[in-house]
Image (cartoon, rainbow, N blue to C red; front, side, top):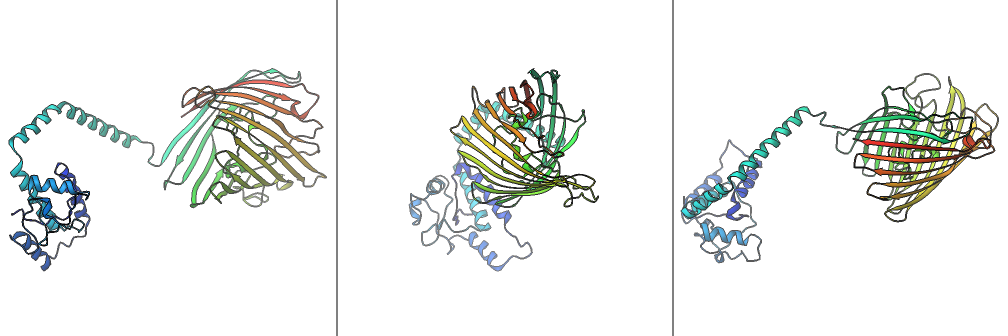
Length: 507
């Protein structure tokens, strides 16, 4: 076949013609093909390519200057010039144009490919072949090594695919070792040195790429001291048994609304964008539970429910949630809407230098068997300033108005705290944290309110200093000293001084 061919959209140099052929072939394969009928126009087109001097094409181009619509500034100019000069497999239209932006048909591609292959066969010399052979010999060892690495990688990939845990689920978790001792306390307390643990495993699954189903399993045995009524942030005991902790599903309802639906272990703080405090983490924050802002814990209940975060602006969100304490029970005075519950509404502001939250929580609880106990209205404010990349200073206040049902009198509970964090102090990932404030107290006399203190004329002051040493990406060691003045809001008790070390393994 003569190399007189209309090739209107060649985009590559001869050195990478194989790439062009592959891409063009893929495009051809992607087009819809009618295999039953060959049209008259198609037959005529084939005939045109087969005939020398077709009216649809000009003679073989011997110089790129013969193509009036191809300029040196065109991005494919050098590629066309090389094909013409070296292989002579470019033709144009009778008017001397190339029309490089016009689409190419299958027939044009096939004819053009054949013409260029003929040109290659005519122009490749023995010297070129010798050079190619020398290159192959020179890089033979490297090519063999590369081939071996690819084969090994393919084998490992196949093994991983055959033995993977799940295509949708990832496992992550942590384990905490904790040792603690009371250095000084009132003589009424008889606390001993302790060594405890907590471990949890999170199974996070995604089905759309934007959602998350979390199943958390936990076991722990970290018991609090009598001299420390506030307790540890990771404290609690399951007597060595593994139990289901979190079970919830997150998904985006719209681009600005995220939804969470949970069936187990959901507290009101699980429905907010942030609790603001930089020390509120049981694995990396304060060892004292006082690092958890009190407005989320005074008189609140919960277990199963739903909530959403509505992003009002880039910095402001409205966080809403409802959680019932006994949602699975069909008994009277229980269930999703007829039993104990807490509902939260929070306005959250998050930015690079300042975070803040205004919180309201409504709680209803019973004494059991449907007997009413109390209503509570919690109000809270929490703020945190980032003075620079290292120093953060913040704090908050919590107030709870508890209305006892069937018992005369109401109760008011107050709490204050301040926080100070020095990030990356002494090394990347390290933190020096300082926590101080008045733990929840009340001047009123009431009982049976979860998370609320007994009546007292005194206030208990708590201060903690800890230093988190990030050994590596997976291990941190955090020694801490906790001071409690007037434990249990009782001025008749001597102060407590507690030392603890938490070692966290993340995986």
